Image (cartoon, rainbow, N blue to C red; front, side):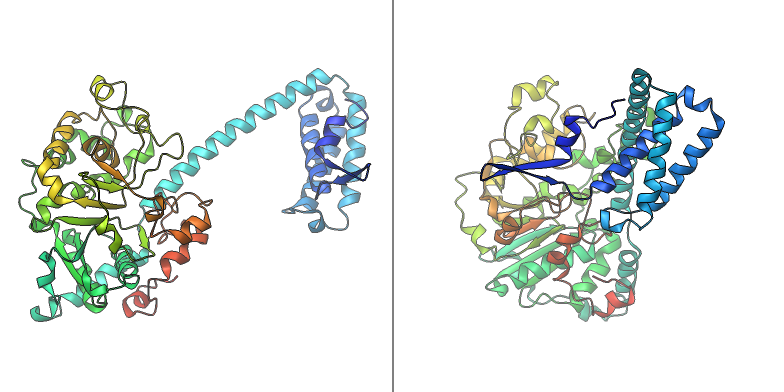
Length: 487
């Protein structure tokens, strides 16, 4: 190996700036840390060389020097973190390497060893990435202890109330088409509370806003109790139990029939794991919940209303949304923000274009839009018979050959050529997976969306974005204190 430092290494470890005709070289910060790590890599290469291993005493001494240097390096991330004896230990290791060089001067053997180490490191990195994805998915699906406690406490309190006190006020507003109506389908009480609170607190005229919540049987009583004890100001609230929708059964809804099928049970519960999809994203149990698919039945759930805004439970409203009702959607059914600023947010990302049904029906490069904050013209929906279009596509996808699971792919095919693009400032996405969402975009947004696994109510949520969400909860509220739910 060359005795002098190659010019390339020097170039990488320094920066040159020309000022007034003179060249000034500035050494990059923490060069000592970098050099120590380089020396350790070189020493580990020597440990695997045959000529070195033949000398037991040298091998023993080299291992000792490596341990000493690793100890002084510790968790240091900058030169100032190194202890005073670091120079002495590194110098001893360098002397050992000079001696080892005299024992092994065949560069080709060293290059082969370095390549083997690089290959091993790449395999370990790949394994760690797979483990990270698995653990992230697991954390996203795990219910924190506090969120398990909360519905139990609320349910106990609800059933102790007199029937008269279990009712919400202003129920005449629920079918008033002149008011601003929102649909929210969730089994997460805390997330729903944030959506409701942020919507009402940012509304200019809260009494004109009506929020319709649908939840499952298990969370019906707790959800009602939460809003009875934490009423949303002057806004009107409704909480319904999905079990009360007797018309929504597997004879009417193909998706309900699919969710209860044996193939779906096999897919989720492992009786046929060998043929199941390896992508953990598509094995999320949320796809089994009919609550996730209720957005496709808005006209049936709210037959007296002509326009609604649909909100996901992982969003925060930052501005008054009343302006959405005055947008002229020009005969379109769905008003949504498009997300095709990045090349991968196109139709071919979500649909199987190797299937001829998809190929002849859609453009693979068409722009994708987002669920989470959508304006739906229910009158136009009924006129164009959108629910029947949704059902026909679900029947065609019984074997999941057109798309995988979820609600966005069927949304893309159902509302093809029926979606009106909204201004991006209405709906900013990515706060549940992308730490680099532009802060200016967040400040100007009407709605921010924590789409992704890193939800703000989970420990894995991105800390820099959590305050936008937590500010709409009163952590001094008795139920939250009793369940040890903190910011």
